[in-house]
Image 1 (cartoon, rainbow, N blue to C red):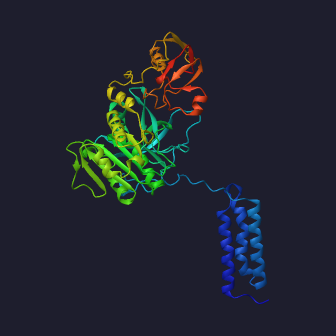
Image 2: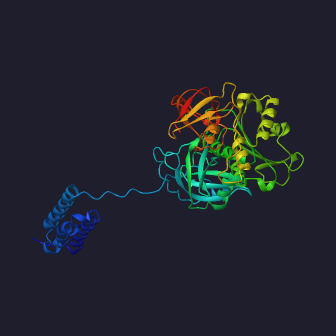
Length: 468
């Protein structure tokens, strides 16, 4: 029988060699790679010992049959799952302000079931202004939030745990990370500024809060921010440009002077890139008027936010939604101003964190009891009641006008608390028995149905028992 040409023999040898290499890549070493490769090596040499075309074809068919048999009897090892997170869809461009790595950060571990606080790594720290820093943390899987909500952060200062609430400044679309922007004021904020670096760990609780972006509403939205009050509003503004780019969105920021303008480059970027987004910065040092020479995308004014400015920037104020966050006096002034412009009260929403801010400013000694900033006791609250703390096995009397949190602290029982104004949910505790009056609306319907209250704004209406 005539032998095939040398080129045909070379092609047959190459086919056999390719099957041998593929078999080697797909073999499980613990099952004996060499044993599986020996027949393939024999097939590779066969064209030169049996060069007739019929034998070449038979050898190729036999080698294919052997390869398929190995595939069926000896499965290939499972490929390792790639690590890493989903890309951060809402991550900021480097030209927009906070420069970030183009690679998506690895996600933090999912929150442990039943754990109040979860450790997350800090990925980056950004200087937003002379007094405000942004801390970017890996966003744990399942850490969903709405633009405008806050995180509760727990830190150790001189061996004592302190808990504070900070608004989330990143948008929900940034799935790989979550950011808080913190002004340096008080013990905890100053500690974060001084010690937290990339690679540090922070203990955080799931996002909470009801001051959120008004979804499902086509009306124009206006954000009125005073100083660090921009933090929840910048999250909403970023979300508006990403999720509802056709909705008119105006951000008006009031600050003391040029040095106090946070997110400066990003505000310019957003205003330039999004036709429906508008930004104005008002510096209080100086009389009202348009400031010349400012960056083109951002309108600049001196003085304070007033009716003239609102008229310039918001064509139809009475048909717009207003979101306000800032110092208490500023928010009250804005509410009165908007009422005078004919804006219905239902279209004006604001963040009431004045109590937490006051505590931060007053606190000077780690672990010292902060001055109470809770709301006044409701008329229904009365003294002479007995409060039983089930877990602590402690019973304490509650005097008239005293909140349950104050009674608990007076008994020397440790309980997490932060805002003391019924906002942050840090002191959320279950009522096991009795009746109390809780003046906060921060608890959702499920919490209330399960018997949870906020002791900082809860008052005994008789003997009661808490799961504390």
